[in-house]
Amino acid sequence: MTQDRHSYAEPALVRTTHLELELDLDFTAKVVEGSATHTLAWSGSDDRLVLDTRELTVLAVEGSTADGWEPLNFSLADPDPELGSALTIHTAQHDQVRVNYRTAPTATGLQWLEPSMTAGGVLPFMFSQSQAIHARSWVPVQDTPSVRFSYAAHVTAPPDLMVLMSADNGTTPRRTGSYHVVMPEPIPSYLLAIAAGDLVFEPIGTRAGVWAEPEMAKQAATEFGDTEEMMRVTEALFGPYRWGRYDILVLPPSFPYGGMENPRMTFATPTVVIGDKSLVSVVAHELAHSWSGNLVTQDSWDDIWLNEGFTSYVENRIVEAVYGTEFAVMETAIKQHSTVVKLDPLPLAQQAVELPGLNHRSEYHGTTSLGPLKGAWFLSWLEERFGREVFDPFLRGYFDRFAFRSINSENFVQHLEEHLLQDHPGVVTADEVAAWLDEPGIPAFAERAVSARFQIVDQLRDKWLVTGDVPAGATAWTTQEWLRFLDAAPDVLTESQLQQLDRVFSLTGTANGEIARRWYSIVAASSYLPAYDELAGFLTRVGRMKLVLPVYQALSTTDAGRAFATEVFAAAKPGYHPITTAAVQKMLG
Image (tube, rainbow, N blue to C red):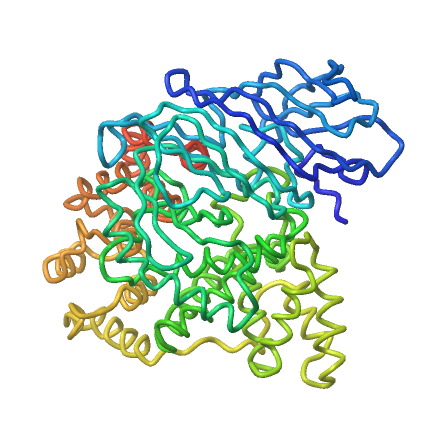
């Protein structure tokens, strides 16, 4: 077991096996108050329990006895700005320990939205984001992926709001003000999730459905209508879906990610609901986490490639099976291009796949995606070398062997050697595997995905840059083709080039967030002022970090752009999640 340097917990001594939560949501004060009762499994002779906290007020701590509960002594360490405070509880190795506590309004893992920031504009909204180390800001917990536990919760909230968690919520939106949920499978703390708002349910299959605000629910259900087929495809490839239901909660635009793979209840951004299913690979990705990440989990954030690299690979297999080979190849080519672009300027020491997940801190969010990208490429390379008839059973066996366990890279490499390399000698060498996992950059022997449609896009873009001829047929391009056109274009274009693209294709004001991300990045780097109003509107409406951070980064390349970015951020900040706010503040200095 890895000692997780991003947590104060001591799981080698004692581990939480089950968690009982009693929570009250106070929308006026923007706090959660209640208790967390840990059922414990002790492994050593020491009698201390160390939990992770951040900005929590600990009201009391109790230990279970034969006659009830007795008070326990505890101490809260001085806070580290990123890791929070260690809560050390002195016990007699009690079977259960209960912590009564209250969160801070500034909890980094929670966002409280005023009614004006929701689609309906009438009721408030609250949601959590626990990954990577933000669960500790709303639950005192062993906040490390190396510890897995089941949980149950009783939540009270205003009766006009529906409360959901990463658990068995049912499919009936009964608003009672009192909610009981159960998660029977063991999960790591970063998959603890809660949301409350004006939410309704739309079924999209026997095991899948959409929760969303009424204004978004039917549209989202249509957009995500292929979810059940995605589940069947993945089960055929990599084994049964082991979580009961798979529902999707569509959050307000301030959600900082495309999706969060909370088991039984994926949280998703509304920016992927655009009406043509061109961005539903986000759903394929979060569903893939039901095997890689949720089922087989990294045991520390240093090995995040085990979660995200495997998930990106499985996602692509789902996309290929449901939407066709060419769609999947385009998606792969986009990610491989992104990998190379991100790796090129980095020092060689930072280009290995096993990158520090958090750089010792919570900076994982929005900054460290190279290991996962490179990891997915590595798995695709293994598939190419061994063939799917060999590699697919190997990967299915991997998910079966390590189901509901947390592992590290060494565990995977040992499994790889024992169940693939030794059974098929001479196909790949140890040096080749080391080149992927331990050495910088992308190995010279790696093959890139080649899309015939992207080759046409490249030719048309290159011709346009030389002659000014508008790409023929571009009005019928898919999102992926437009991303290829813009991603491989120069970061700075002339005003006449930008005017021409905008006049013919109306890119300014596009409802497609992925296209907007790249278009407004070029607009910002090129100081194309006619599009700045729409650019500012985009940054104000959307809080998804993948979409807004590149635009802020491009604005920051000039003094005038940085001043404009600072002004826009001041207006947008009230609607951003704390994670997004911190990332933008760091970028703007």
